[in-house]
Length: 176
Ligand code: ADP
Image 1: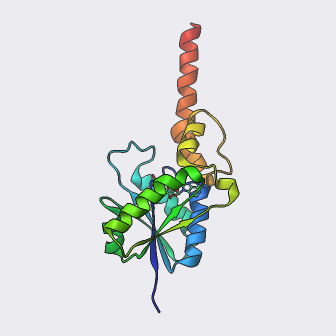
Image 2: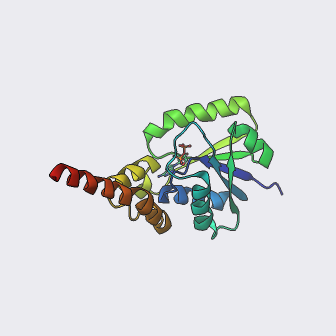
Image 3: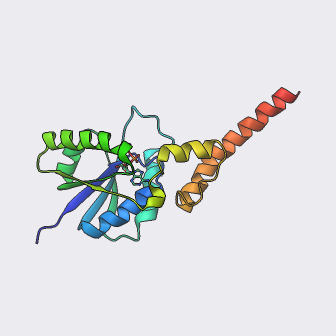
């Protein structure tokens, strides 16, 4: 029987419950799912690739057919290298569609044997993005329920606490 290997590429900066929702759905339909973190030196990331990898690995251990990897360069080249025939991507709202369609068609042009498969997360995660999570954390808001607890703690240490300290410092300076 043919085994279908899929990759789920992304930045995962940081991992959210929306990403995990998609991993769970993907793990059900593919024989093997490789969550592939893009190493992108041009994009200023909040968490290092190693930190993101650690969070993903910890949170996906319960799926026996899921593993985590990193890649750079063309996604289609990476997919070919690992023997993947499918790419998993998430569609949250119509706003995702245009960009994802363009990417999927371009990737098909580059590698016609690779199929892009879109999945929708549970409704509760349809407005959730890593960017919003980073913004909320930096403004001192709660991201409980939007990201795994492990990610929540790391965000607190890396973003919320330093932002609060900076704010207090500015207040002190302004006050005297
Ligand atoms: P990228 O920079 O490639 O968009 P992301 O980590 O933001 O990296 O997203 C990776 C993939 O996960 C994309 O296909 C994106 O649409 C999907 N995704 C992100 N957040 C969610 C979510 N809340 N629900 C479902 N899919 C999501």
